Length: 124
Image (cartoon, rainbow, N blue to C red; front, side):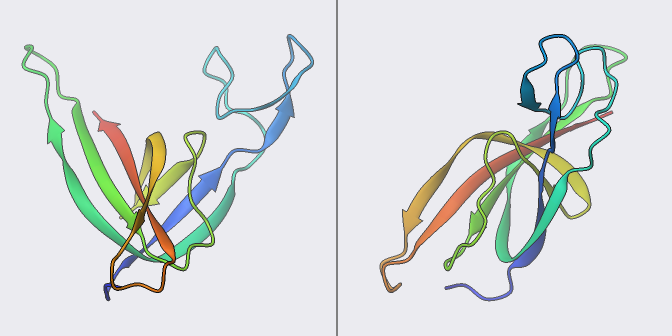
């Protein structure tokens, strides 16, 4: 595999009882923007390759948001792969997971699969 990957942190939201439906749900925020009282669990994952997926800025006047994407390559052996419900801390930025991780195999590996995960963040 490739050397010199970075350590990222996968955050998973806790489960709580929804105050309206009484269902047990996994979520980051209540619908009205109030934070859940449970803390997310965190798992550090070492040796992850981080690549820029690009960034965009709105062209409208008085808009200063920047949308950035990162492509994360989790190298085998994999013990933790984020899901679409998780968040990933990359270089100090808390990013949302976009879509589903994509499994990949490197021809020179022993058959262990890695995973490619796209994450994004909107700043501003």
